[in-house]
Image 1 (spheres, one colour):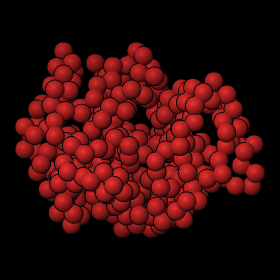
Image 2: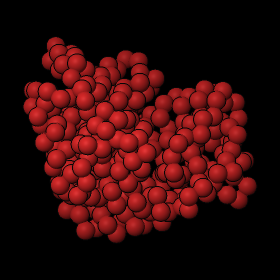
Image 3: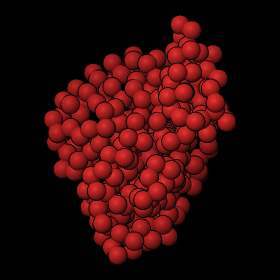
Length: 304
């Protein structure tokens, strides 16, 4: 067995998302630590909402990071295996870097709030949009459809999540994707990872220059280039670019498989990434850690 851990981004949050870990004091302690770093009560927000506050980008990003690290610490405390490689989807990349020892948790929490605000403020509300394209025959057809539909504006593929599952983003007057069975407008407030977010990438680069970053103790595959970086400045550059660049998730999972990974544990609330693992490569075993029962099952499976 060769283990990888992956960390989700925005979209897996919901009220009560950590209720399944009530028996793990380390989870509440981690949420308190994050709350102290931020000056907001993230545990109460996770437990009680309201959904409107939970889904505000400036709240969602630190909340998802804190939840992922809380669940990682529960995994570690229960004797979970150390991964051979880690990665995160979009925001989840910051969780991966914390686990790999590249960024201190206390630094990462306010950093991702800054990232959230920079991304939100890069495009005026109502100008940008994101849509999931489901059931398209191939990614190349969507890429071409976006080019044709742009007409001087921005319409781009931004999340290559799995075969037949791609997200586009850009100006709201967006493309009708060729051959897609379904295009679903996403309930997000900005066209994340599109080139419209370049102002956010520039602000983030300046902020990252002030954050202490160390060489990771576990290889981290980055979204922007599906490569690992040991040098702190290369990590800063990858994180800044990521804000305005596509998330290459299909290639990330394929790269893990090529390195001999057999089991991929999703460390965070929800199980979106576990579903994507199965779509990308059926030979891989994907395991969520979305509650105590799932944690127990993942521990048993990876120790077998």
